[in-house]
Amino acid sequence: YLAALRDAAGAQLSPAPPEDLDAAAFAAALGQTGQALCAPAGVDFRLENGFAPGLCLHARRQNLGRAVENLLANAARFAPKGGAVTLTCRLEGGDALFAVQDDGPGFPPEILHGGGQMLATGDAARTDGHQGLGLWFARTVAESHGGSLTLANPTGGGALAVLRLPAADGK
Image (tube, rainbow, N blue to C red; front, side, top):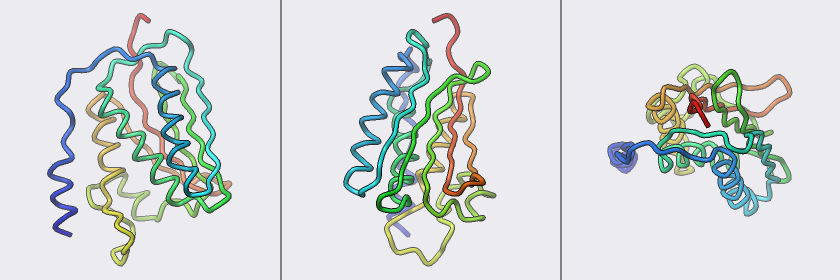
């Protein structure tokens, strides 16, 4: 518990200023991370990079990358061996979406209703080292960019986390 609190205190957003990021290239790099996280777990990874060439995101690269990586790590952890994790990146209504879906057991009700509260794990008896910081950090990053994080359990099963932030104008 103390280690989790120490981690939370240290999980501050990078003070680096936002920069213009090539959305398609950024998504491709996240795809490599997703593959690296899923392969050791025996989980199939798919990247659906729908960002058009030239689309620009104005974001803190380190924070946004870490936020989406947290979502990917959660999905890889909970997808069953032989299952799948999909990262879908696309523009929707002027917002850039990073949607991570797995075919695991889905989010527990406490997590769905908490929406990324700090130290929320959905199960007080967990002993797998999960500290409940990944979703909190992803939500914090999304909100710091004027966006949001939504969580859902799709009708077909699994879990879906969608990080949404405004795309930069002009590029």
